[in-house]
Amino acid sequence: MKRCVAARDERRALSVGLLGNAADVVPELLERGFAADIVTDQTSAHDPLNGYVPNLMSVSEAMELRASDPDEYVRRSRATIAAHCAAMVGYLDRGSEVFDYGNSLRAEARLGGFERAFAYPGFVPAYIRPQFCEGRGPFRWVALSGDPGDIAATDRAVLDEFPEDEPLARWIHQASERIAFQGLPARICWLGYGERGRMGIRFNEMVRSGELRAPIVIGRDHLDSGSVASPYRETEGMADESDAIADWPLLNALVNTSAGATWVSIHHGGGVGIGRSIHAGMVCVADGSELAAQKLDRVLTTDPGTGVMRHVDAGYASATEVARERGVRIPMIE
Image (tube, rainbow, N blue to C red; front, side):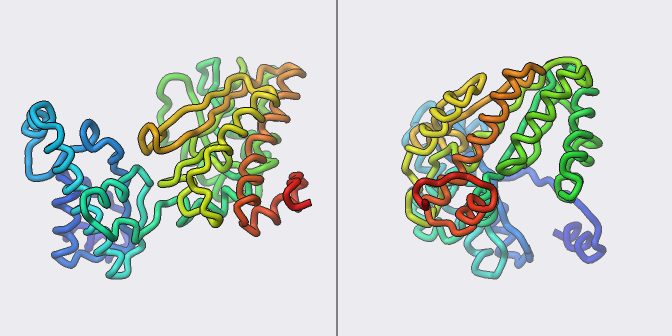
């Protein structure tokens, strides 16, 4: 605590890692009056039996209890999650900005007996939904050549394509300097409706011209604007209460298939556990061919376009404005 306060007062960046259980640490920080501007969490809490460790016991003791009495283990896990969540709400009551990643911490805390678990939001309704209304979300690509030089070339292309986007430029520069590749070299950034298609066509042309040594595979996260129904994360607190309606990811998968995506998937549970969400995934290959250019243009337009449509349908005025400005046809408002 002293190290953190000193770094704050000196306006010096500092990261402190503390080994402990959040249900012990966060309440203790709150009790001691440790001031926090922001309190957040990314605990994987959707599986209280196999993916969570109760407090007040060692890991080996937890493993023994998991095998001998799974029901008691789940009870203790949920009690631990409830204590953690209660401390976060305590910080909320003191004026901190509080949110979590949406990995079912609040849902399990409520099952553990804490009634105010949903007093603070997940990060999507708190910060990300305005971007989803623009069809803006994660845009990923992988260099099949295995050559980091291909990613460096695509980094330069992104900066060239969107010179006015300062946050994007800052990220690309920092990622190229600080992020180590694992397996095939890859990159991710956030792009919106219209921008993804432009970038896909640009990558395809780079493959065709020989600027890149091999094709580029383009995909995205399952967390995106129009490809998911996840009432405790991506679609939490929708304006029209359509949080759990699963039609949109199914529509997204069908549209991407029709548009010519290389690979389309429908899957369950991303981040929150099977049965609690449904997502549609897609991948396109930029191999330099004219056919690939046509497919990329279609898929990278219709995929984020589903997100714009989904949010127009839910009643978000900003999504309606984006649709009109960028020429997204929305039959519901014609």
